[in-house]
Length: 182
Image (cartoon, rainbow, N blue to C red):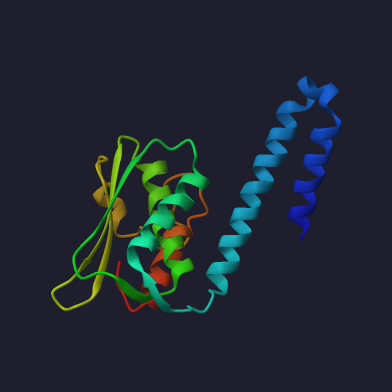
C-alpha cells in the first residue's frame, strides 16, 4: 500500500531527524497529516465502491451505544461533548451488524463535533417505534443544519468541511442495508 509506505517513511524521517526538528517540523507534520487524509479518502472510496456485506446478529443495544461512544472518544480525544445514552423500555437486543452500526453512530458523532460548532451536548437514544421497529437517534443542542443543505446531506462527495464527503453516504447505505431509513 503506497500510502502506508509514505506514512512509514515520514515516521522514520521524523524519528531520525530530531536534531533538525525545528527545520523539518512543519514539512513533516504536513506529510503526516496529508498521508493520513489520503488514507481516510482511500478507505472511504473503497468502502463506498465495495461496501462490506452486513453480518447481523443479536446484540445488546445499550452495549452498542456505549461502544460507539468509546470509539468516538478514542478517535476524537479532544472532543468535549457531553454524551448521554438512553435506551428505552423493551429494547434489549436487536439483530444488527454491530461494527457497521458503531460506524454509523461514530460518524454522526464526528459530524456533530466537526459541524455543530455550538453543540455541547449529544443525546443517543434507542426506542421502539409504534410499528415495532428500532429507532436510534443522535440529537445535539447545536444550531442545526442549514435548510438549504438538508436535501443533499447524504449524497456522495457532499461535504461541509474538509472530509471526503462520503461519510454520510456510507451511513445511509449501512442504515438502508438494515432495511432502515435516515
